[in-house]
Image 1 (spheres, rainbow, N blue to C red):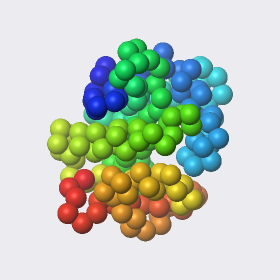
Image 2: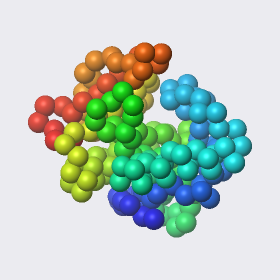
Image 3: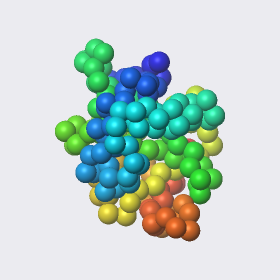
Length: 175
């Protein structure tokens, strides 16, 4: 199901047949380093992740992570994910994104992230959207700053979790 369109991208709900893409994405070195190991090792694990993650979030929250596809690719496979998450330890929904490394540095995270933030504020009427990232993830920090978010402070989502950087809307920004 198509959710958002930008000049170059189509964002749609993640489906069970995206299992091979999810398996690849969640096992890329950058994902494991900056986001974490989700324990997804097989396509069956990937389908379980899709059911318990994005699909559950669509039903429960009315939003979630979306598959990001190139518009000129027709029914092309996703190149990344981008969307809103409701995480334990955060009061506000947060923007999340991850792309296959071969699609980094092309502006897709900023383009899809901007569309998601606009959708969250205008359509979903969310009063505030934040973001978190690993302190050493310079690429994601650049993306968040380009989207109008600014570093607020280091936080832990749980007592056991590592510290992450919390980004909030810059002064004058609605999300």
